[in-house]
Image (cartoon, rainbow, N blue to C red; front, side, top):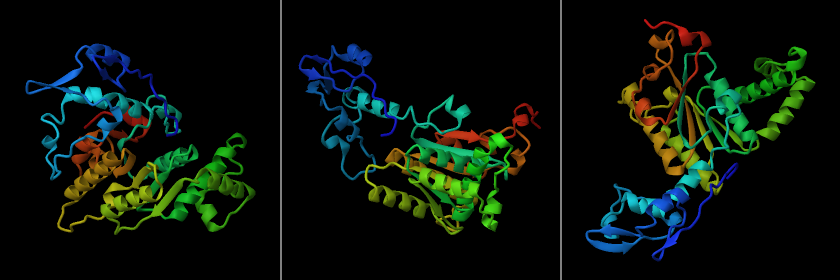
Length: 322
Protein backbone atom coordinates (compact mmCIF):
# COMPACT_ATOMS: atom_id res chain seq x y z
CA UNK A 1 0.00 0.00 0.00
CA UNK A 2 1.29 3.48 -0.86
CA UNK A 3 3.00 5.27 1.96
CA UNK A 4 2.78 2.35 4.36
CA UNK A 5 4.95 2.46 7.45
CA UNK A 6 5.23 -0.67 9.55
CA UNK A 7 5.87 0.04 13.24
CA UNK A 8 8.43 -2.12 15.04
CA UNK A 9 6.94 -5.44 16.10
CA UNK A 10 8.72 -8.16 17.97
CA UNK A 11 7.79 -11.67 18.98
CA UNK A 12 8.01 -12.55 22.67
CA UNK A 13 8.19 -16.23 23.53
CA UNK A 14 7.33 -17.36 27.02
CA UNK A 15 5.90 -20.62 28.31
CA UNK A 16 5.62 -21.91 24.76
CA UNK A 17 3.58 -18.95 23.41
CA UNK A 18 4.86 -16.78 20.59
CA UNK A 19 3.02 -13.43 20.64
CA UNK A 20 3.55 -12.38 17.04
CA UNK A 21 2.25 -8.93 16.18
CA UNK A 22 2.14 -7.59 19.73
CA UNK A 23 3.83 -4.26 20.37
CA UNK A 24 6.77 -4.46 22.78
CA UNK A 25 5.01 -2.52 25.56
CA UNK A 26 1.84 -4.59 25.29
CA UNK A 27 3.82 -7.84 25.07
CA UNK A 28 5.81 -7.05 28.19
CA UNK A 29 2.62 -6.46 30.14
CA UNK A 30 0.82 -9.69 29.27
CA UNK A 31 3.64 -12.13 28.46
CA UNK A 32 3.59 -13.56 31.96
CA UNK A 33 0.10 -15.02 31.39
CA UNK A 34 0.30 -17.00 28.17
CA UNK A 35 -3.05 -18.79 28.22
CA UNK A 36 -6.70 -17.80 28.02
CA UNK A 37 -8.99 -19.08 30.75
CA UNK A 38 -12.35 -20.36 29.53
CA UNK A 39 -14.65 -21.74 32.21
CA UNK A 40 -11.83 -23.01 34.35
CA UNK A 41 -9.92 -24.65 31.50
CA UNK A 42 -6.63 -23.39 30.12
CA UNK A 43 -6.59 -23.17 26.34
CA UNK A 44 -3.56 -22.06 24.32
CA UNK A 45 -4.04 -18.92 22.30
CA UNK A 46 -3.56 -19.11 18.53
CA UNK A 47 -0.32 -17.33 17.75
CA UNK A 48 -1.29 -15.96 14.32
CA UNK A 49 -1.97 -12.22 14.36
CA UNK A 50 -3.14 -12.24 10.75
CA UNK A 51 -5.59 -15.07 11.38
CA UNK A 52 -7.21 -13.01 14.10
CA UNK A 53 -8.19 -10.36 11.58
CA UNK A 54 -10.33 -12.92 9.76
CA UNK A 55 -11.88 -14.30 12.92
CA UNK A 56 -14.23 -11.39 13.58
CA UNK A 57 -17.66 -12.76 14.18
CA UNK A 58 -20.79 -11.67 12.37
CA UNK A 59 -23.71 -11.73 14.81
CA UNK A 60 -26.09 -11.99 11.85
CA UNK A 61 -24.49 -15.18 10.57
CA UNK A 62 -26.46 -18.41 10.62
CA UNK A 63 -23.45 -20.17 12.09
CA UNK A 64 -23.09 -19.81 15.83
CA UNK A 65 -19.78 -18.17 16.80
CA UNK A 66 -19.78 -20.31 19.94
CA UNK A 67 -19.31 -23.51 17.95
CA UNK A 68 -15.53 -23.04 18.00
CA UNK A 69 -15.06 -21.11 21.24
CA UNK A 70 -16.88 -20.35 24.45
CA UNK A 71 -15.66 -16.75 24.29
CA UNK A 72 -15.29 -15.95 20.57
CA UNK A 73 -14.99 -12.18 21.03
CA UNK A 74 -12.82 -12.07 24.13
CA UNK A 75 -10.66 -8.99 24.57
CA UNK A 76 -7.59 -10.84 25.83
CA UNK A 77 -7.64 -13.25 22.89
CA UNK A 78 -7.94 -10.26 20.55
CA UNK A 79 -4.88 -8.63 22.13
CA UNK A 80 -2.82 -11.78 21.50
CA UNK A 81 -4.16 -12.70 18.08
CA UNK A 82 -4.95 -9.58 16.10
CA UNK A 83 -4.28 -6.29 17.81
CA UNK A 84 -0.69 -5.87 16.67
CA UNK A 85 -1.51 -6.55 13.03
CA UNK A 86 -4.53 -4.25 13.09
CA UNK A 87 -2.56 -1.44 14.71
CA UNK A 88 0.13 -1.78 12.04
CA UNK A 89 -2.51 -1.76 9.30
CA UNK A 90 -4.20 1.38 10.65
CA UNK A 91 -0.92 3.23 11.04
CA UNK A 92 0.05 2.39 7.46
CA UNK A 93 -2.29 5.20 6.35
CA UNK A 94 -0.54 7.96 8.30
CA UNK A 95 1.29 9.22 5.20
CA UNK A 96 -1.84 9.46 3.03
CA UNK A 97 -2.49 13.19 2.65
CA UNK A 98 -5.23 15.24 0.99
CA UNK A 99 -2.89 17.62 -0.83
CA UNK A 100 -4.22 20.63 1.10
CA UNK A 101 -1.33 21.83 3.26
CA UNK A 102 -3.43 23.40 6.02
CA UNK A 103 -5.54 20.23 6.35
CA UNK A 104 -2.58 17.88 6.09
CA UNK A 105 -0.85 19.74 8.91
CA UNK A 106 -3.45 18.47 11.38
CA UNK A 107 -4.55 15.08 10.05
CA UNK A 108 -4.04 12.21 7.61
CA UNK A 109 -6.68 10.50 5.49
CA UNK A 110 -7.42 7.30 7.39
CA UNK A 111 -10.14 4.84 6.30
CA UNK A 112 -13.55 6.12 7.35
CA UNK A 113 -16.73 7.89 6.28
CA UNK A 114 -16.13 11.62 5.80
CA UNK A 115 -19.06 14.02 5.34
CA UNK A 116 -18.35 17.47 3.88
CA UNK A 117 -21.03 20.13 4.26
CA UNK A 118 -21.42 23.75 3.19
CA UNK A 119 -24.09 26.17 2.06
CA UNK A 120 -25.07 26.31 -1.58
CA UNK A 121 -22.49 27.62 -4.08
CA UNK A 122 -19.68 27.92 -1.52
CA UNK A 123 -17.46 25.44 -3.35
CA UNK A 124 -18.16 21.94 -1.99
CA UNK A 125 -17.75 20.25 -5.36
CA UNK A 126 -14.69 22.32 -6.28
CA UNK A 127 -13.01 21.49 -2.96
CA UNK A 128 -13.71 17.75 -3.08
CA UNK A 129 -13.00 17.42 -6.80
CA UNK A 130 -9.56 18.97 -6.32
CA UNK A 131 -8.98 16.68 -3.34
CA UNK A 132 -9.80 13.68 -5.55
CA UNK A 133 -7.48 14.93 -8.28
CA UNK A 134 -4.66 15.36 -5.75
CA UNK A 135 -5.14 11.85 -4.38
CA UNK A 136 -5.15 10.38 -7.90
CA UNK A 137 -1.95 12.28 -8.73
CA UNK A 138 -0.20 10.40 -5.90
CA UNK A 139 -1.43 7.00 -7.10
CA UNK A 140 -4.71 6.41 -5.28
CA UNK A 141 -7.60 5.06 -7.31
CA UNK A 142 -10.50 7.51 -7.08
CA UNK A 143 -14.15 6.89 -7.95
CA UNK A 144 -16.02 10.20 -8.19
CA UNK A 145 -19.81 9.78 -8.42
CA UNK A 146 -21.11 13.03 -9.86
CA UNK A 147 -24.89 13.17 -9.52
CA UNK A 148 -25.24 16.84 -10.36
CA UNK A 149 -22.58 17.79 -12.91
CA UNK A 150 -21.47 16.11 -16.12
CA UNK A 151 -18.09 14.54 -16.76
CA UNK A 152 -17.36 17.36 -19.22
CA UNK A 153 -17.99 19.97 -16.53
CA UNK A 154 -15.81 18.18 -14.02
CA UNK A 155 -12.89 17.60 -16.40
CA UNK A 156 -12.91 21.17 -17.73
CA UNK A 157 -12.88 22.40 -14.12
CA UNK A 158 -9.75 20.35 -13.52
CA UNK A 159 -8.10 21.70 -16.66
CA UNK A 160 -9.04 25.28 -15.78
CA UNK A 161 -7.52 24.85 -12.33
CA UNK A 162 -4.22 23.75 -13.89
CA UNK A 163 -4.12 26.78 -16.21
CA UNK A 164 -4.64 29.01 -13.17
CA UNK A 165 -1.96 27.24 -11.11
CA UNK A 166 0.53 27.56 -13.96
CA UNK A 167 -0.15 31.26 -14.48
CA UNK A 168 -0.16 32.38 -10.85
CA UNK A 169 3.17 34.17 -11.21
CA UNK A 170 2.06 36.22 -14.24
CA UNK A 171 -1.21 37.42 -12.73
CA UNK A 172 -3.29 34.64 -14.35
CA UNK A 173 -2.69 36.01 -17.83
CA UNK A 174 -2.98 32.57 -19.44
CA UNK A 175 -5.65 31.15 -17.15
CA UNK A 176 -8.81 29.96 -18.91
CA UNK A 177 -12.11 29.38 -17.15
CA UNK A 178 -13.95 26.06 -17.37
CA UNK A 179 -16.91 27.64 -19.16
CA UNK A 180 -14.58 29.22 -21.74
CA UNK A 181 -12.92 25.86 -22.36
CA UNK A 182 -16.35 24.35 -22.97
CA UNK A 183 -17.19 27.23 -25.31
CA UNK A 184 -14.17 26.39 -27.46
CA UNK A 185 -11.28 28.46 -26.10
CA UNK A 186 -8.37 26.08 -26.67
CA UNK A 187 -5.11 27.93 -26.08
CA UNK A 188 -1.66 26.42 -25.69
CA UNK A 189 -2.18 26.68 -21.93
CA UNK A 190 -5.37 24.62 -22.23
CA UNK A 191 -3.62 21.98 -24.36
CA UNK A 192 -0.81 21.70 -21.82
CA UNK A 193 -3.36 21.48 -19.00
CA UNK A 194 -5.17 18.67 -20.82
CA UNK A 195 -1.93 16.70 -21.17
CA UNK A 196 -0.99 17.25 -17.51
CA UNK A 197 -4.45 16.38 -16.25
CA UNK A 198 -4.55 13.22 -18.35
CA UNK A 199 -1.27 12.04 -16.84
CA UNK A 200 -2.21 12.84 -13.25
CA UNK A 201 -5.70 11.34 -13.47
CA UNK A 202 -4.73 7.90 -14.78
CA UNK A 203 -6.28 6.20 -11.74
CA UNK A 204 -9.29 8.52 -11.45
CA UNK A 205 -12.80 7.77 -12.71
CA UNK A 206 -15.67 10.25 -12.91
CA UNK A 207 -18.94 8.35 -12.96
CA UNK A 208 -21.59 10.55 -14.54
CA UNK A 209 -24.78 9.74 -12.65
CA UNK A 210 -28.31 11.03 -12.91
CA UNK A 211 -31.16 11.96 -10.63
CA UNK A 212 -32.41 8.38 -10.76
CA UNK A 213 -29.19 7.00 -9.24
CA UNK A 214 -29.77 4.80 -6.19
CA UNK A 215 -27.47 3.87 -3.35
CA UNK A 216 -27.50 0.26 -4.58
CA UNK A 217 -26.10 1.31 -7.96
CA UNK A 218 -23.26 3.25 -6.28
CA UNK A 219 -22.39 0.38 -3.93
CA UNK A 220 -22.64 -2.11 -6.79
CA UNK A 221 -20.28 -0.08 -8.98
CA UNK A 222 -17.68 0.16 -6.21
CA UNK A 223 -17.83 -3.57 -5.52
CA UNK A 224 -17.54 -4.38 -9.24
CA UNK A 225 -14.56 -2.03 -9.56
CA UNK A 226 -12.76 -3.75 -6.70
CA UNK A 227 -13.52 -7.15 -8.20
CA UNK A 228 -12.11 -6.06 -11.57
CA UNK A 229 -9.06 -4.39 -9.94
CA UNK A 230 -7.77 -6.88 -7.40
CA UNK A 231 -6.14 -5.53 -4.23
CA UNK A 232 -7.25 -1.97 -5.04
CA UNK A 233 -9.06 0.04 -2.35
CA UNK A 234 -10.41 3.10 -4.18
CA UNK A 235 -11.23 6.41 -2.54
CA UNK A 236 -14.98 6.85 -3.09
CA UNK A 237 -16.51 10.32 -3.49
CA UNK A 238 -20.28 10.88 -3.68
CA UNK A 239 -21.49 14.29 -4.87
CA UNK A 240 -23.97 14.63 -3.35
CA UNK A 241 -26.00 12.89 -0.63
CA UNK A 242 -29.42 14.53 -0.97
CA UNK A 243 -29.69 13.78 -4.71
CA UNK A 244 -29.49 10.00 -4.34
CA UNK A 245 -32.92 8.60 -5.18
CA UNK A 246 -34.69 6.76 -2.34
CA UNK A 247 -35.07 3.02 -2.87
CA UNK A 248 -38.60 3.25 -1.47
CA UNK A 249 -40.71 6.19 -2.73
CA UNK A 250 -42.68 6.07 0.51
CA UNK A 251 -39.62 7.08 2.53
CA UNK A 252 -39.39 10.60 3.92
CA UNK A 253 -36.36 12.66 2.88
CA UNK A 254 -34.82 12.19 6.33
CA UNK A 255 -35.37 8.42 6.33
CA UNK A 256 -33.86 8.14 2.84
CA UNK A 257 -30.76 10.16 3.77
CA UNK A 258 -30.28 8.17 6.97
CA UNK A 259 -30.52 4.91 4.99
CA UNK A 260 -28.00 6.15 2.42
CA UNK A 261 -25.52 7.21 5.12
CA UNK A 262 -25.78 3.78 6.75
CA UNK A 263 -25.26 2.02 3.41
CA UNK A 264 -22.17 4.10 2.66
CA UNK A 265 -20.79 3.42 6.12
CA UNK A 266 -21.32 -0.33 5.60
CA UNK A 267 -19.51 -0.10 2.24
CA UNK A 268 -16.65 1.76 3.91
CA UNK A 269 -16.32 -0.53 6.90
CA UNK A 270 -16.69 -3.81 5.03
CA UNK A 271 -13.94 -2.84 2.59
CA UNK A 272 -11.71 -0.58 4.70
CA UNK A 273 -12.18 2.39 2.35
CA UNK A 274 -12.04 6.15 2.46
CA UNK A 275 -15.53 7.38 1.52
CA UNK A 276 -16.20 11.11 1.16
CA UNK A 277 -19.77 12.37 0.85
CA UNK A 278 -20.88 15.91 0.07
CA UNK A 279 -23.92 17.07 2.01
CA UNK A 280 -26.04 20.22 1.82
CA UNK A 281 -26.88 22.28 4.91
CA UNK A 282 -30.16 23.44 6.37
CA UNK A 283 -31.22 26.88 5.22
CA UNK A 284 -31.71 28.02 8.82
CA UNK A 285 -27.96 27.43 9.35
CA UNK A 286 -26.80 29.53 6.41
CA UNK A 287 -25.92 32.48 8.66
CA UNK A 288 -24.54 30.58 11.65
CA UNK A 289 -21.31 28.61 12.17
CA UNK A 290 -21.43 25.00 10.97
CA UNK A 291 -22.26 22.34 13.56
CA UNK A 292 -23.93 18.91 13.56
CA UNK A 293 -27.39 20.49 13.44
CA UNK A 294 -26.49 22.17 10.15
CA UNK A 295 -26.51 18.96 8.12
CA UNK A 296 -29.70 18.70 6.14
CA UNK A 297 -32.40 16.11 6.78
CA UNK A 298 -30.23 13.69 8.69
CA UNK A 299 -29.56 13.01 12.33
CA UNK A 300 -27.82 9.85 11.12
CA UNK A 301 -24.75 11.82 10.02
CA UNK A 302 -23.98 12.74 13.62
CA UNK A 303 -23.99 9.09 14.70
CA UNK A 304 -22.67 7.35 11.59
CA UNK A 305 -19.95 9.54 10.06
CA UNK A 306 -16.40 9.15 11.33
CA UNK A 307 -15.39 12.70 10.37
CA UNK A 308 -17.53 15.75 9.59
CA UNK A 309 -15.99 18.71 7.76
CA UNK A 310 -17.81 22.03 7.44
CA UNK A 311 -16.84 24.65 4.87
CA UNK A 312 -17.77 28.22 5.71
CA UNK A 313 -16.63 31.80 5.21
CA UNK A 314 -13.83 32.77 7.60
CA UNK A 315 -15.90 35.58 9.11
CA UNK A 316 -18.49 33.03 10.28
CA UNK A 317 -16.08 31.82 12.97
CA UNK A 318 -16.81 34.89 15.05
CA UNK A 319 -20.39 35.42 13.91
CA UNK A 320 -22.84 35.65 16.84
CA UNK A 321 -25.58 33.04 17.02
CA UNK A 322 -29.26 33.94 16.96
